[in-house]
Image (cartoon, rainbow, N blue to C red; front, side, top):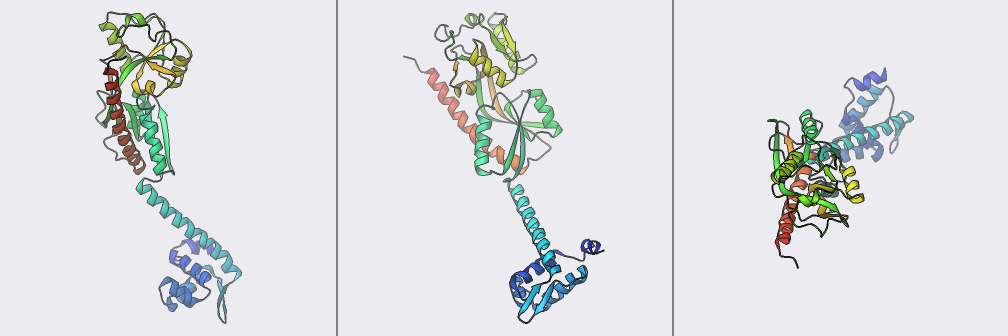
Length: 322
């Protein structure tokens, strides 16, 4: 069968190049010149293709050649094959350079509001064909997905302990602050540092067995206060924010989430014992893909900018008001 002869190794890529060059140039001589080979080589190559196909591809004319009906069909397919090969080569080049491909990143609260979106925006401006997949989950779930290879990296609060197969890189520090909606009755009516006066309001707490929950409990314990009786426990940022802007709840959030949200206000009550190191967590035993490496570059750039912004915010808070 002709199909078997096409796939048994006798038909080469150079044959496809040669046939399309003959069709483009109209003569064997000019095809040879365009390919920088001799006319006998072109003649021999064309004969090899015709032997494989069992049909003449060109009709010999007084001043050149013209495709036969067999040639027209084959040349059209040959052009398609060569175009696909060129596209494949370009795709591999882009993949190797990090301009194409997919990076899957996990996130949870810290880093999800400014650091990651800004890094993604910078990445997409530079590499618009690169796909970024963002998955949200609890810190424990993100670690498991990372170890399983379902994520390239995670962005968020760095854990004091991680499995030996993971490594962390700090990008900036971000304090945890108490937050309420703009227009909340607590604004302007609470003494700075008076956590006791806030207990009467409803609260949103992180779920049990998260690092922030443990740290908040420690703050209340140090102040000799019980946990607020009226509270919701959740880790969904969408649910949390909607409750914040539509009710009188108070929540502890990474500072940049509140700073960047016009509908939220930071309370003067400090939580000095809670401070997050925000960064990336990656597998030690797996080199980042070009796409992941490209995202890392932008995460580091945006992390440096946020570190400067945090210092500026801290200085402004330290200045006497009025």
